Image (cartoon, rainbow, N blue to C red; front, side, top):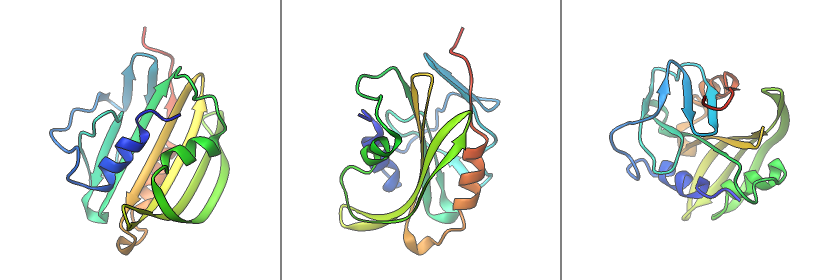
Length: 172
C-alpha cells in the first residue's frame, strides 16, 4: 500500500498545507536518495518548489491553481500490486469519482497507468491527472491536482514533464 501517498495528496490539494521552504534533493534534474534514483527534465518556469512532508518532490503551479507531486519509494511491503490498485490507493478518501480517461502507456521501459478524473476531497471537487508506474522494486507516482474551474491549461506541461522521467541505478 502507498504508505505516504495519501498524506502527500492531501497536502498538495490544499496549497497552504505542508508548504514551507523548498528543499527538494534535485540536482541538475537528478534525484538520489537511498534506493531511489531518477532523472526528470526541467519543471515549467511557472512551478515553484514547495516542501510536502514525506513526498519526494513537490511544486505549486500558481498560474493554474494546481499542485504537483512526485513520490517514489522502493522495496516496501505490500507494494507489489497492480497499477490500478496503486492508483486506487492514491485516491483513498475521495468520493464521487468521475473517471474521464484511464490508459496504460509505455513508460521508461515499463508501463504506467495514466488516469484523469474528478473526485471530491472533503466535499470539494478536484481534478486529478495521475501517472503510476513500477520499476525495479520501486513505485513512482506523479500527481497533478487542481480546481476544476482552473481549466486544463496546466495538464499538458505536467504531462510533458512526466514524459522526461527516467530511472537511474541506485546511489553508489
